[in-house]
Length: 222
Image (cartoon, rainbow, N blue to C red; front, top):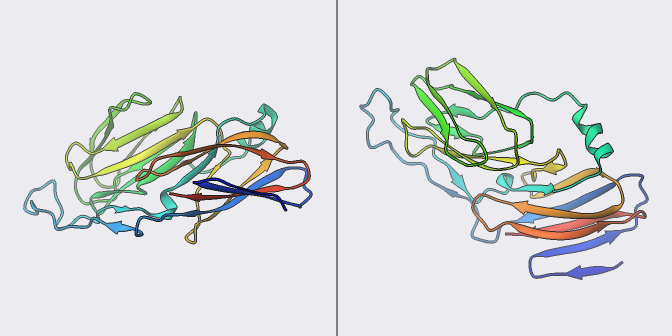
């Protein structure tokens, strides 16, 4: 077995024959683990506020995204043809849930309000500027994301609400499981640029090779 060790990433080539390769690995967060930011609302008497916010948790393994920047057109077309439910970024307990949403270019995201108060959803990010206005519980609005990049999402009524939408160039991306494990499947043999992204840490970039004779194991440490 050949092992290449870098300061951030560890690659190992596994002798598994497959017509389409798989990038497998584990994400590790070495900064002390998740940190909750839940706090009582200082303005609970306002019509636009609830008594407490669910708050955001920083440093979660599940907030990481592993993406492949470029794949052969035929490979991407096979995934594009699959029908998948529209991603949702909900307003719930006076916070955005989930904190991180990842979608491929051309995807539409739904923004339902699940709180008994009004919310607003907007972004001034160059990747996608929008303002969905104010709307009450039970209503939802959606928007399409046409180019790759990071979109920071806010509510203009509640300044502590924030979320991230990462728009990636194709559907070859994944999120880690609770134990940090992940896999990106259906990759033909070849050289790929892989990016590991997390809202709380510096992104990691690496050129890797998926061999014809086996898969690649990629361990990422933030």
